Every structure is written in structure tokens, then in C-alpha cells.
Length: 356
Image 1 (cartoon, rainbow, N blue to C red):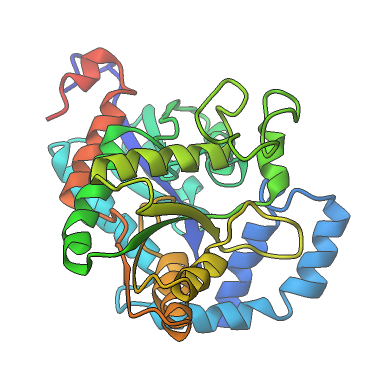
Image 2: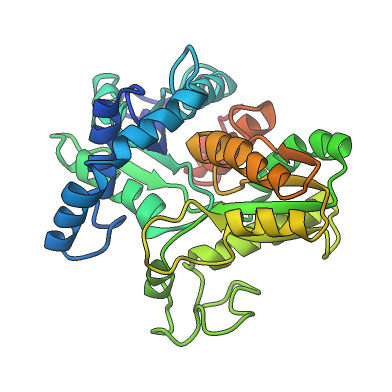
């Protein structure tokens, strides 16, 4: 692949959010402390963040979260990490086995710093970074990109970094999720498909409003299309993902809707809320419901426990009859091909031409 001993040797870094090392409360507490100490996640004053974290959240939430993690933990460990490792291995194979591929987590292990060190030891001096977040948010995509640059700056020989932009409506991602969904939708025949995205506080959305607060969340149709004002708006990108996926799946306008899950605290989060809509749809007579979570590329606590377990339970209790969670793209072959396509578009032409 290299034309001379001095040609750039490149690698691929896949970055996801993070997971505890185990289901023990101490490990969950360590994970939550790092995660919620991030000012891009908890964007409040440092003093208020410290007080809320240490006096309200960490004394109680680790035990509750540990119990939830135990319900989804596998013999190989956390599903998020299992899928990430499988994906890294399959992408490396798809690239011909010549390109080092690492999976890293923004929070906890395997860390971004350790992955960059392994690249350095292998002589990699050009790295393509793929944050595994389809839509842009400062708290996920932004935080991951920032951490990569910070850790790379600690190396004596700083590698050249190319970061793949959010792929919320890229055909490589949309078709991968659609291919995973099609056979399950054909079997379940849902009356409604709920496209559930991770939630964010409303203030995170308005901070990304390029108009200075005149556009985002100012009208019912503010997310109807991607514009200059909302081009970095997480909610607008979620709706763009939903429209593209619904079109690829051939869903009529009344066959699907968007909601947002996993809210935390008392501040207003972007609406509508997934848990509220799941119960309301059942009460309104929707007997067969399928949920797709296209803000995640790997099944994790938020999909497997929050939706497939608690969501199903509340839906059936409210009168629903059939409930199906569509898996994430995980390490499916179509997503492996999609990643190869995504990174190929970010590489210099001479290098991308050599990708199988």
C-alpha cells in the first residue's frame, strides 16, 4: 500500500461512548463519574456539576444502573464493547488485513489514549477517526472528537487526524439500518414504527442554533429540513435520519413517528418522549409496534434494557399486543461495507483507491 518507506501508514480509530468495566456498582460509579464530569455532557457551572454529581447522582444511581447492566451483560462482557470489537475485526478484514483498526471508548476502556499509543507503536502516522454517532451532538460526537485531539497532542509524534463527519443521512448508514430492519418488519407487520433517538436537554439544541436562537425549537416545523441555521442541530439531524430511513423502508407518512428517550433530571429535554409515546400508542389502539433506535450503531443499555425490556413491558401493560425492537447495525456485513465506504470518502484519493 505504501509507495516508499516514508509514505504515511494509516489506521482507523472507531470511537463509541463508553461502558463500565463490569456490572459491579464501583465500576459503574467510575464510569458515571467520568461521563457526567464532562462539561460537554453536564454543561452547567463546575460547582453545580460537582454538587449534583457527588451529592445527588453518585450516591444512588450506580447501584440502580448496575442492576440494569446485569440484565443485558453477556458472557463476553458489555454488549456495546462486544459489538465494537466485532466491528473492528470485521472492518480490518474488509480492508484486507493491512490496516490497523482500533475500537476505543470516550469514557473508560478501552481508552482513546491507549488506542493511539498502540497506533504509535505500529508506526501509524495518519489516522482516520470515525465517531460512531450518526447525528452530531456536542455531548457525544463533539466530546469524542475533542478527546481524540487532546490525547493525540500528548504524543511526541502527533499523527495526522482525519475525522469522519456525522453520517445521519448518508446512504451507507441508512441502507445498513434499513437492511437490518426489513426482515423483522416483514415478520412483525407493525401498525406503527417508532424511531427513537437518544434525548438531549433543549439547551444543547439551542446552543447549536447558528441563527443565535431564532430558529431551533421556535416552531413545530423547525426540524423539517436541514438549513444553515440548524445544520449542527442534533434534533434536526435525527428527523433527517428518520425521513431518510422511512423513505428507504417504504413507510407511509402515518406509519412512523419520531421520539426521544433516556432523559435525565428535571430540565426540559427535546420532545416527544419515547416512554410517553409508547404507552400512548398502546392506549390509542396501536396493537403492533416496532421500535428502531437509529441514534445508536450498537445495541447497548439504552436499546436492550430501556426499550426492549422496560419499553415492551409498559407497552403491553397499556394494551399493546406485539412489540419488537429492531437491532442496531452492530457488526452486520452491510454496516461493515458502509464503514469502508464512509472512511474511503475521507482518505486521500491515492489511499482510498487502494481500499478493497
